[in-house]
Image (cartoon, rainbow, N blue to C red; front, side, top):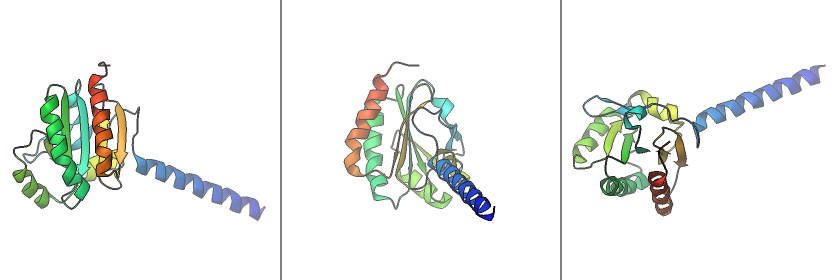
Length: 171
């Protein structure tokens, strides 16, 4: 009887651990994107529904992340080429507010939206456990793909996915 109880407890612990891991992963392909993203330097709230009808690329980043810093100019270029009527890139900084303020002021020429993840609401909603972390969201608000911990070599494939999302018919 005790053995049965121990097995049941062990199975319950594994199930709970599995749920916790699944929760850390966050939403994935085919899921409706969580609304919350972050806030701008001016304090405006940035949410997914604002961009309905556009392909939305959300990247969570920090200044100390080399791949993140290399992808921002690439995403800025993609934003300029595609145009804001079709594509919106939102770069969500996960650092403290002081760092966010400083870096935002240096990126004022960028057309992409720079946001801050105040209170980790966006990171938690998207299951960000490490960076870089990018989510491509279709015009219908459904997640097309999620990239976690990718390298610079992955950027060409990611650009191809964004272009495919731009070519896809509106839902």
